[in-house]
Image 1 (cartoon, rainbow, N blue to C red):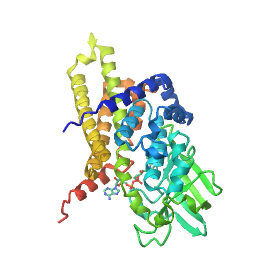
Image 2: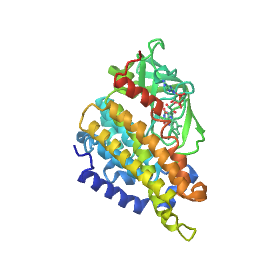
Image 3: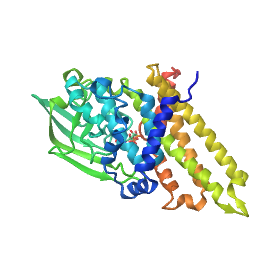
Image 4: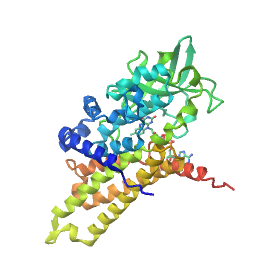
Length: 387
Ligand SMILES: Cc1cc2nc3c(=O)[nH]c(=O)nc-3n(C[C@H](O)[C@H](O)[C@H](O)COP(=O)(O)OP(=O)(O)OC[C@H]3O[C@@H](n4cnc5c(N)ncnc54)[C@H](O)[C@@H]3O)c2cc1C
């Protein structure tokens, strides 16, 4: 079976590269990192290419669900700027993938056209101070009162909440004893009275700052419960449903884009930098680091494209997506750290993109389901007995 990318992926990549070269020069990407902020108008310009419709069915103005296209887009954007790739994920993945799959008809009609146009952003409100990998233990409470929902609690690591239109929030909507039951997903506009945001500083992923979200008697209409009546208290089946496999590929796509950019920079630098009378690319230690990096990149591309292709074509893909999350994120971290060595001291200095790649790539094996969690998934899904 041939997993090389097809003409569509090639054409999409060309389109995105032309856009990035024109609209997002490297200095602008560096500025978004330094200022820890990206204007959301950039997404509206990106949407004019049609890429925000890659996760939306045609009847709602999209281009049909194209997981390969979504992954290609995240990867290409991340080569230039994780902030821009983050905006895209907030729109096309957190927003469109979920609403297309799990929204009521009213929610689809209300939200999908604006999402396609790049005008709506979702942030994810899953984690809490005491809730990391163990998501079914969320404590933020939602109580139904007639046709409204009242929310009280505390969310943590809510990236992009300050610029989002909605937080896609996992809440406990019944008794906590039933761990996987009594969970719901509610769309909470961050500007609703009773919502307070507090910024959390992080070493990387600048431009997509993350936040604590404090909720005190926050009232939203029941119409904002994702999936409506049928999904109240049944959010676990939405979170663990068909969108999960596509969502597992967002972070490895980011990681691969960063690693590709780091290898391109180190490859070029090794030919310019001269020591002991010649370019350092002539030295065996540098040649081996770069050959290893290219080899790992090639393996990452295959893992990611194969997993995306399986999701795209509706084949069973839970093992492959977990393997791609694990392998691509861990390998991307190793690749970027070796590329930093190629640049020597300059790989550690502000003003060189390499130090940003290092800061950005380090979180890839941590969020979106850590490497340890993916190993658990793989062993469990492949039915490795415990005794
Ligand atoms: C920059 C950044 C942005 C983020 N953005 C968001 C966001 O937008 N929305 C959101 O909801 N969350 C977000 N997160 C949170 C992220 O998804 C969590 O970090 C992740 O869920 C893991 O939770 P934790 O870090 O609290 O680790 P914990 O779950 O506390 O785990 C700590 C360590 O124990 C290991 N571990 C935990 N359980 C197991 C197990 N069963 N088996 C083996 N090892 C285990 C983990 O791998 C890890 O090494 C973000 C995090 C960061 C750093």
